[in-house]
Image (cartoon, rainbow, N blue to C red; front, side, top):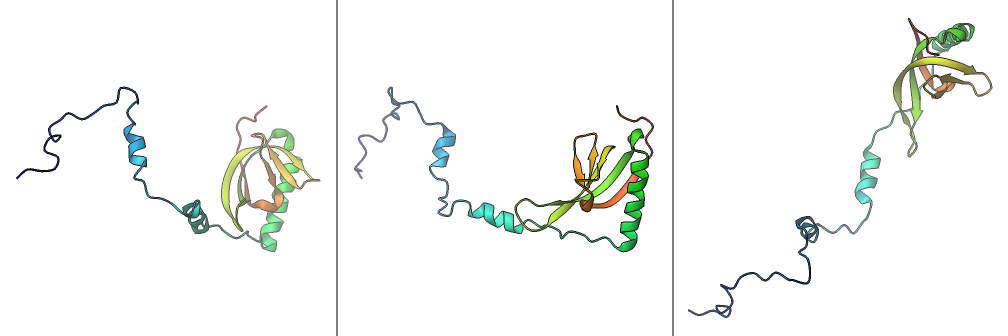
Length: 141
């Protein structure tokens, strides 16, 4: 049986001398699925990302935090080492997350109601969930 392409079936594969060969990664991209809704997967992933609601301190917790802040204000010159659990609001959606932070205290700003740490972080006092004063053998400069 003779076929339509029997005369060319055994010829070597043609390689152009004018055009460079396409890299394999680009060739594979030709067959990638088409996404008609650009950004849809990102929007779905963002809506699935969980956030937490901000906390509200009880009166006892608030009184304890106030006492610790007064102690820190009185001992600010020693740059005490503190550990904070703070609420960080989410930039994209309602809610946020809790983070732990350990650093030396540099300043308490009563006008902005914030703590300034030696690592350059400013923490609003209203975002503090818990504060622990740690023993500090060496205070930073």
